[in-house]
Length: 174
Image (tube, rainbow, N blue to C red; front, side):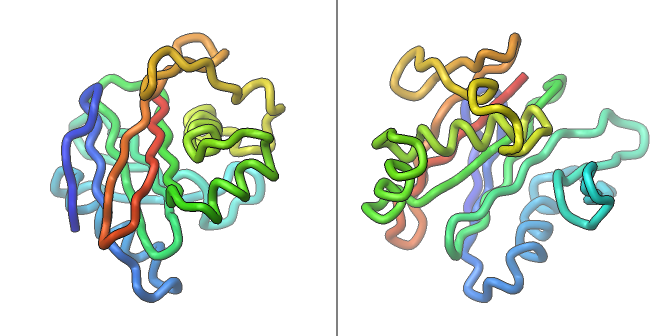
């Protein structure tokens, strides 16, 4: 596992997941490493009630922290929001030719960050990508910071490298 404090008080952690059937278990192990002792994780889909959707954390006697989970191929990335955040979402994708081509075909944009920003915003909004596209468009401020049309929601991009794979991570905060 690799972890680091990212911008704006967030924490990111990531690791390889050689067996894709273990992605969920590995991401939960990562979360337990960055969360305070005694944290209880749950996951319930707001649409169907299934055991997927946003991960929720419960802590006795402390504010419940916001977390987000994302995967890119065989890599799992988890994020922990700073105390006081009202909304939080992360997304990660490999920054390679195949992903850039897929993003270009899906969105008419060249950069992988265009897609990861949209996904991070959708997660922070709690809608997933079923929201109207204009609700998850991004207005770049600088090369790695951006704002969303949703009032109070902003974000930043980060780059990580894991075992020779370059990844783009976008983080949305509210």
